[in-house]
Structure formats: structure tokens, C-alpha cells
Length: 298
Image (cartoon, rainbow, N blue to C red):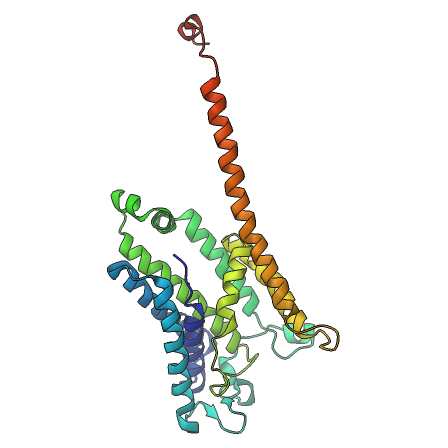
């Protein structure tokens, strides 16, 4: 399965985090939890259609991306009268401008002073911790084994007594929850505010996650480092002088990296098949052991 719906799940997560922060004035960890839950629900819907109706998850995910985007924009904007919307700045209310809303901000624990910024929080450590947690779940638990078994061969998993429908839905729900969690980390760090007027295209973060996962060969621990690498390219590209370099140069570099990653997996499979094919030929052509050696256990 391939989750193309991370952008929509990210959008719902952003809305959940901002709604809890601005309207309900809840602390940051509760806002983050709600963002994760909303993203998970939005991801579980394509998983449900895949599990019970065998509808391709790519198609439903893309549809729910746009449904989620326009739904969130409408809920926030409301013809310019939405309670979360700041007409002067054409964005959602700034969490850092109000003492009442500032408790929804993820704490920095002195990182802002250390790096001399205004938006450095512990979010990056929370993201890394979740990546480690996902690695533990996938590799050290029965639940993770079942998820991987269904992904490799759902028919064989069903024969082994694993509920493949439940695991298909859960895998998409977990993917959506992670996307919503990422959105919560971003907007609760007050890096930016949601702009419903300019948010007419899907958030790039959802698609960047695909390139990060491919570069890490779908290893949760590897995504920590591949995410930092892709982020440095993307952010660094925005600081290049447009007089000498087009702004799309960073996207070009990222695209080349992804193609090379895809080719490496292809070549790895071909080389693996070739090596095992030669090994099989060697075993077939090998001379059988003499009968007396077999009797003596040699």
C-alpha cells in the first residue's frame, strides 16, 4: 500500500491543532493529540474502502486530499468572519501574540536562546522520538509483524490467521496519525499560520514525506536523517540568489536523489536475483557426495 493522502491528513491535523489552541485554548500536548487523532481518522477512511471494497487507496487518498483542504479552508475562513481567522493578516490568529493562546505553543526549553531564534522548539525531538517508537513497533512487536505480513502478502497473512482488513485500516490510520502529528508540531511551534486564501494547493509536506521515506528505504530510523537532508536542500534552496540560480534548483536536486534511490532498489533486486540464480546453477552442477561418506556422516 502507498499513502498518497498525507497532505489531506496533514491539513486535518493542522486544523485540529489550531482549533484546540485558538477556540478551546487547550495546552499544547492536548492540541497535538487531537491533531494526531484527526489525521488518523482521515487516513482510516481510504483504508476502510481498500479493505472492504478493494478500492485503490491512491485514488481515494487523492480525493480526500482535496476534500480535506477545501473543508478546512471553509471552516477557517467562513467568508472572512471565522473566529479563528485574522482579517488583517489573512491568516489564523498568531498563537504567540496572546498570553492566553501562548500555552498552546510547544515549549522550547531554552533552545530559542541557544540558537537565537523565535520558533525553535522541542518539536524536532518529539518527531525523532516518534520515529524510534514506530521502528520498535514494526520490528519488536506482534502487531508490527502482522502489519508487515499483510503488506508482504495479505493472502498468506489471512491463511496464517491474521485479520488483513483490520491491519489495512490500521496501517492507513497510523500513516494519517503521523501526518496529523507532523502538522501539529509545525503549527504549534508558531512557525507559520494557516492562510485559507492562499492554501489552494496541497501542502508540500505530505509529498515530501514520500521522498524522505524512499531515501531512507522505508526505515523509520533512517527517516530522521533523510528528513534533515531533504530539509536542508529545500530550505537552503530558498536562500539561493535568484540572480544566479533558479529557485527550482532544490526541487531538481531532490528529484534526482529520489530517482537514484528508486534505481538503486531496482539494481539491488536484479543483482540479488542474478546471484541466487548463479548459486542455484552451482548447486545443481555440484557432484553428489559418495555413498560411504553419507553413511559415515561426512
